[in-house]
Image (cartoon, rainbow, N blue to C red; front, side, top):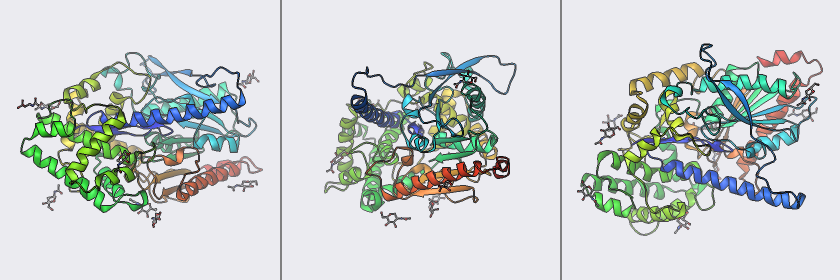
Length: 515
Ligand SMILES: *[C@@H]1O[C@H](CO)[C@@H](O)[C@H](O)[C@H]1NC(C)=O
Ligand SMILES: *[C@@H]1O[C@H](CO)[C@@H](O)[C@H](O)[C@H]1NC(C)=O
Ligand SMILES: *[C@@H]1O[C@H](CO)[C@@H](O)[C@H](O)[C@H]1NC(C)=O
Ligand SMILES: *[C@@H]1O[C@H](CO)[C@@H](O)[C@H](O)[C@H]1NC(C)=O
Ligand SMILES: *[C@@H]1O[C@H](CO)[C@@H](O)[C@H](O)[C@H]1NC(C)=O
Ligand SMILES: *[C@@H]1O[C@H](CO)[C@@H](O)[C@H](O)[C@H]1NC(C)=O
Ligand SMILES: *[C@@H]1O[C@H](CO)[C@@H](O)[C@H](O)[C@H]1NC(C)=O
Ligand SMILES: CC(=O)N[C@H]1CO[C@H](CO)[C@@H](O)[C@@H]1O
């Protein structure tokens, strides 16, 4: 029953890590991240062979750089520091009046590719921008070696992360000789999408405009809306889903629920390739989360990897065999595809993983992100309300909240209070900002928490028919659907407009445009 946390990744930094129980969803996400990295490297190597056949093939020409940040921006008596990692790509920069593009990190490590590839890089080429990518505190290499201990997690918050960006702005302005003529625009997808919107909202004097892709700015404890979109996406013909497909998935989960009631745990263990016995309550819940996580992951990352998309799920789930048998078979295909023999459905293992305080430089920070959901965001992707959820109602809020209590000592009532505060603090899905573009995909379950309508003439929403999480953040590809091409053009035009208005002959005019 724990909800895997949402993680953002690669272009989406580490596209929001999910908040469902178990680590399986994360594994899928990591696989998506690895795939993208591999594709990127392959393209890069090909490029290097063509243009510099004799160069040694390095991962990237852009090195890891660090700046010192206070562990606590708000309490002068805390004098500890940590080193925050960032990258800079000056290749396209027109120093005189080119903008600065800030790519914001989230719940996973960033990489040099974040200043080399993606929509923001394409736009940087066009507009002569200096590109920075800044890793989020406590993720990747931006953490002290004992940073994951409970006593330090209090310094992991979106407010501290935004203050890091303010402090980075000051640091970079001085180090790279950035002037008033170089206006800043920030980018982010998923949780960093929220940070992008919030950076503009809370620090409008530092950043001129923000692109917020797939940004779940309205936080919510029980995010049952996630699975409503998952259900709608699996039924959506635009991505080759169908009602029959979603009905069959629901039917299969109903049979599983019945087998659980009948205590047929050995059958379930064998049918769905569980590594462990799942008869204890917590393990059963984890099993259900992991199984549902297959569908959540594939929908959220629809078409990020070849063969793993709604179309394939629905082909498998609408075969002539019974829905249950189709699900059993698809689970096996899925595990093979992930290179795993069985699902680890052990709740104890899951908790142990969350309690591990050893930082890992790569990938998603599972412990950190879980802490952020417990302490600020909730986002638990449950199935226990009266919704159109296809999965088992045993995927419930109670078990997600138990993880907060068990691992961090944060009780459900506190989660409530913190989630309410976060919405008050930032304005939920009606933030009163200006020059913020919210971009969402209709297939992306996270869009349910984003800004989907124009809030004002300068706080606008772009809704992409048929795309999943953060699709617009990738560089353009020949296979992109017209809706995505059009969305990117709108973002491009918006940035063009912002830059034009700052280049008016009387520069002081700029002040009138900022409010
Ligand atoms: C910034 O300007 C100073 C003084 O003009 C110069 O010495 C330095 O090299 C410049 N730094 C960069 C990164 O351009
Ligand atoms: C799983 O555990 C239950 C309860 O302890 C036990 O009855 C059952 O035989 C176990 N199944 C397997 C396959 O070990
Ligand atoms: C399930 O997990 C919760 C939270 O870790 C724990 O309090 C509870 O005792 C566990 N239940 C069982 C039956 O092990
Ligand atoms: C089932 O899904 C797999 C993995 O996506 C895919 O390769 C396969 O073609 C699908 N099977 C059918 C019958 O559509
Ligand atoms: C769920 O639906 C049932 C039947 O419509 C209703 O009796 C029940 O109160 C609902 N529960 C919630 C939490 O809305
Ligand atoms: C989305 O695209 C499909 C066709 O690809 C079209 O039938 C549908 O009307 C579109 N939906 C919206 C809201 O534009
Ligand atoms: C910005 O100004 C340039 C030059 O005047 C013009 O060609 C371009 O169309 C303008 N772009 C937008 C988005 O207004
Ligand atoms: C779920 C949802 O609110 N979808 C909305 C997304 O944005 C489009 C365009 O603004 C609306 O038509 C949808 O209703």
